[in-house]
Length: 225
Image 1 (cartoon, rainbow, N blue to C red):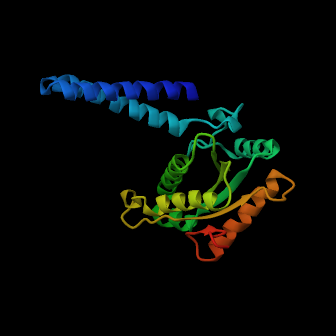
Image 2 (cartoon, rainbow, N blue to C red):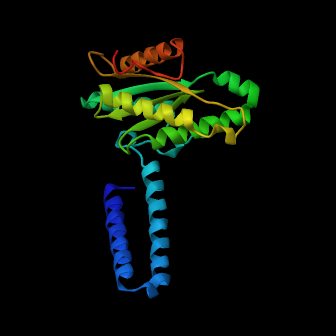
Image 3 (cartoon, rainbow, N blue to C red):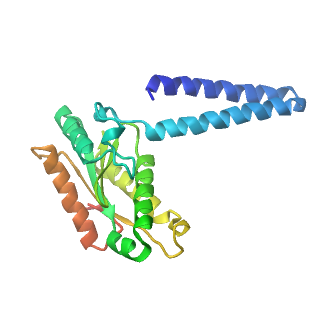
């Protein structure tokens, strides 16, 4: 959905809220009308949230849903790496995040592959919700995921990583199985002096491996590294 369409929806939403204020001010006899307006606002908010969550970054131009991972709905490895090449070539500031699930093989073995697949699908949802429309989340394969955070580095990138990590840790995984717990380990890197986009991703991968070897369920480098 275009930014112009989202802006039009914002205006429509404000108009509906103003109507509600007027109805309340006029008389309590207008409760039925007020209820209708509230229902319309609720529908619009749900549609807007869906549009924002599913908005595709301009970095993915030329790649439709056919390039997405069928399980998670996130861009697949080819589309993600092309987006990474584009943001690197643009010269803009960005951060790449590499993350995967801690002990995912054990989850599959203990709870079954269908549960493991559902965990991956929900991780994809959480990753998508953690980002802005201009950012990119992708599934690179298996339990491996990556993010492109545009315009931010350092502590701000660390903050995004930590919010995603906590959203995974606090998610009600017991809905899938009473004993299921899921965590992720993350590593992030910015352009710095790297010569290629793949070199930036490789450094994020190394930091992600460091997060795992240091105890899992954490982001590396840490804020004070």
